[in-house]
Image (cartoon, rainbow, N blue to C red):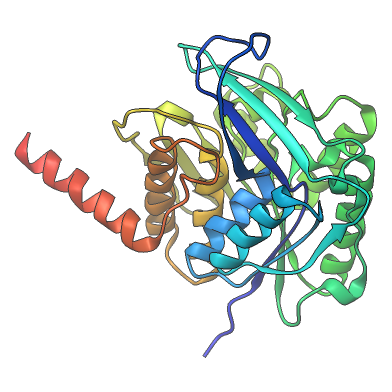
Length: 319
């Protein structure tokens, strides 16, 4: 029986507060919901664990209520948290988000100088057996996290492991040349690439989606998954191509939907599921995610995804 590779992530751990009022721009006194467990790498890994993949998270939180909130959620869903450090002196990172009626968002992140910056990597943290290191490029904006990620990259590749990358190029978190250089380094060496359409525009300005995919497949990439938001998704490898139509759902909170898509896709691929099926499940997971308030609250199980797809099929039969 083949052993499933372990999905490993290193990155920011934070809690998120979501304003109840749309359009406040985080500049007016208003009510918030939270703290919600968050951080792109954590959302990804939590979803992958729910889908049955072995997982391990490296990062840091404060020894405070927010940190306990995060670790409890990840542990409840099956993530190996033994290498999430707890700082006595630094607080857990936070983010505040407010939505507008058109679906756009305003973020304010508090990560610099928090426990997220205390994240460290050493070889002893690597799991035994085959490893796929997943990187969310949002983590590259922090110099300490970037160092840990690049050190882990060299270690994992030296052991014959593979890389998975969500370019997740958020301008709020990636403002310097070093972040862009690290992203380009990882882009050229990753086996699984999961950009959004806006990521492709950021990486290859002026190129069409198809031309950008061709550019990525000319690198190390084995599989490219393009998240198209309300327009569905596209999966391409060197022999297959699958286009997935969007699901008509009521959008409540889109934050974390892309991470849920990626976590579902990688977990299923590493368990040997066919590309078409893994993409179909991932597309549904992304749709489910936007219907729930809170970035990690939208994560789902295989049973929930199958029930959602069955309900969609039944709806289609009746129309």
